[in-house]
Length: 219
Image 1: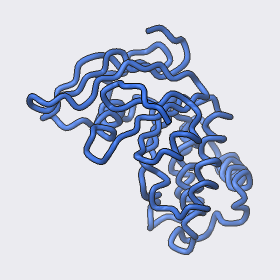
Image 2: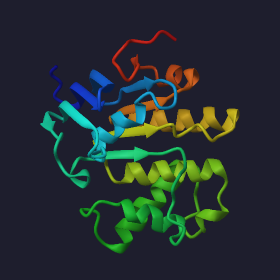
Image 3: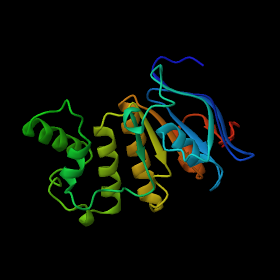
């Protein structure tokens, strides 16, 4: 598989003992959202752990993981250029909203004013103007989800992994945050991989839908 800009799973296979959990060959272009769909325990999150470099040692991985033509299969997690969002926003409770966003800013954004401008612009783009000094505990569920995504994107990841990030939201908010997330990832040209058990999430993503074992799934 060849792709200059994007995320490639090149024969990625993960086994635990005699059980094969993941068998994926998939190319995700920049701005595309692909989906791995399956029931709990089917291997979805195991695939993400392999991509982020956090696969527990009892699992065996073969195949390659490439990002923008570079093999990141054995790189340390912090050097892979991959962002990850979980079911829960996981905001740092000891930091303000602005502090959470500042934590993610890359080193090339220097100077207090430049960093504050970047944070304020991100909040404004998400309809969260004026919330930089707020305690994350005072935010609504939708606000927390948007701040978590902004923090992930401010780190300038080259790929974005979404681990059931909408599952704890009610139906109306789920659709809103899902659209917000996909629109931001596509606009930034980031290769995005969603894992979910929800058909509506997979449909909204708009890209290929596979099982952890590489089977194309109809929706």
